[in-house]
Image (tube, rainbow over all chains, first blue to last red; front, side):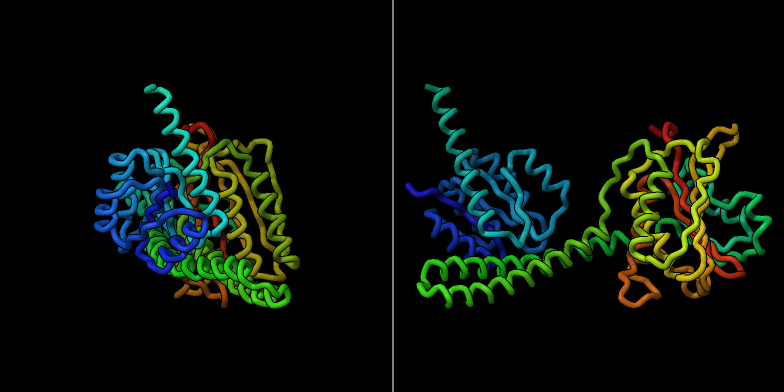
Length: 134
Length: 290
């Protein structure tokens, strides 16, 4: 099964770039431009990685969505994206389980690398849980 | 805050002969010139006692604006950059003619390089308006001054900076972020060097005793022999985006003031009726608050 990635960014143009890139890299990608549609997607589908813009509609509600995913979807690795954000808030999100935060504009090579590492980490964690329970 | 303002007001009242714009913190050495220094100076005149938090509030407002601008600009830049890189990948995959491919990629690299230039600008504005938090450590003031002087001489090779460490053996170590203090020193010295390109800029350093005679801090005075500060400029000298020089950002002194405040120190500027002006930096001694 292809790795599944959710991209949430109100800059739809960037969402499409990430979608094209990650599909070229062999992922199945869904793009949302707001927190409501993202929550609906998360309620119906499972994702391996969620890439979230910190500032959606000019407020840092991407961090709220990150907290929601970390609480409700523990198998989904969260990657934050930001053009600018309060460093303390981003640090707190990373300490609480977000995989990392990448600054816009970013290099696509970095995106591929970070998503690949997040997928590997998620896979390793799932294996360790299943080994522990078996 | 009320106590701080009261203290500042009292200091201003005790210095009726001064022309000072300042920002201070509780527990720091007073920055008014020593009595010995005052005797050798011409009488000064008070212009105004500023509200201490005004410059900080304005810098915070500038920081919010810079953050909003960075968000507004970096997001579309991210889309442009992403599309540019994606196009390069597709061309590398689809174009068989190596000469044509090189030509296409050269154009895309030019676009990408301009995107990176814009990103650097937004990053620079952010760093100039949001200094972050200081890493306070035991710091040798003379080392910091020497570092700043060296940098200013490099940037302004014609500047004439005179620095006499004086009784440096008696100087206590201060509680400061050395990098921040060097930036403040650089800013103040650069201003002085530009104010009097041919004249001397003098640095004096001294320990400031408290009532019991123990060192409470270190005071650095930077004097220039330039034309001084105009009446309409003095009250605005720490305002963000205010500068009398073309092409200057007008953030250097604002940020310096904010950095000194965050380190528990102070920064003042005063002007005499004769030529030139004096910037005074006050830093608390190590061991008083830590």
